[in-house]
Length: 226
Image (tube, rainbow, N blue to C red):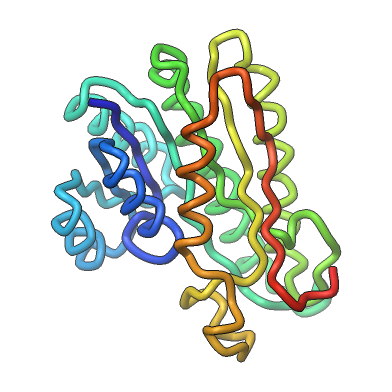
């Protein structure tokens, strides 16, 4: 049975993707910091739950090791763990910048690096949850957008570096999605992209032939002037 590892898998986009992967027949490992929500999500999907702080290098290595020990390999990695704070460049505290950089970029880098030997063995797939804020100027999301732009660059380079091993990768870049992270916008839920929309794109990516390569997918929100 193929297997998938989803960070940030206890809620939001990560959980929506995990549900689709479950439907597609993947054995799952879910990782997140909130143990209670993580275990509830994992129990519902029959998944392995691994409490993980992606800011910690040892946690990232342990997460991949536990997944491979349980499932025997790794076919899909979804880096969905993320954090965002609204704020202009002038108003963003250094600590908030560092946290976003650490979780959104460094954490994805660490988990991917640890997973690569196993992804090479399976000609696997990496999905990195970036953001449309990483593709266009987004006042008020300066630090967040910078980390997501860097994640897109990391993904594009990963695609080229790992092509000879058959590993593919996509940076998924949605506009505002209906999750707790976007509550600050004040936009009603019915005007936001659904987490399930992102999950369906992942389903489609995994069904492509090995000859198809999609480094970046941008999901605009209807009505946005981008």
